[in-house]
Length: 109
Image 1 (cartoon, one colour):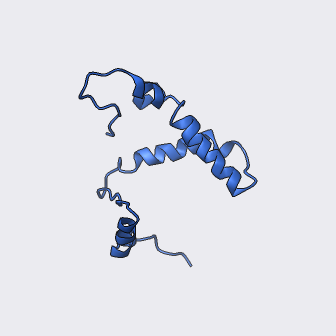
Image 2: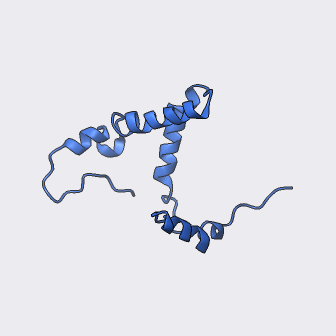
Image 3: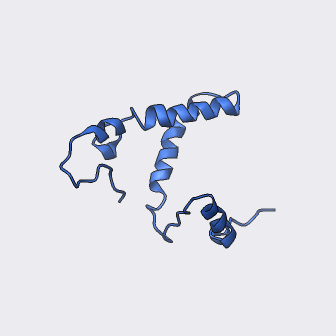
């Protein structure tokens, strides 16, 4: 038997919101029908799938977790060039001298 899709109300329930708040988190709820709402996250996961996950088999969850950590912290956030950052790595982009008052990170569409 096919199960119906998960309804949005399950993610925006009072219980979910309260648990997130107690954990010090603020749930991010996007607008309905906004095609760009999840685009940045989807692009990131797609990139990681192509650049890391699909390239080999992982023997253990710990091995995979370590590889994901190294990909994000060692490569993606520090050395990988990003088109939104004028083809610089995040580290390079953050070290550029800018006139005061300019935002140092890109904005989403």
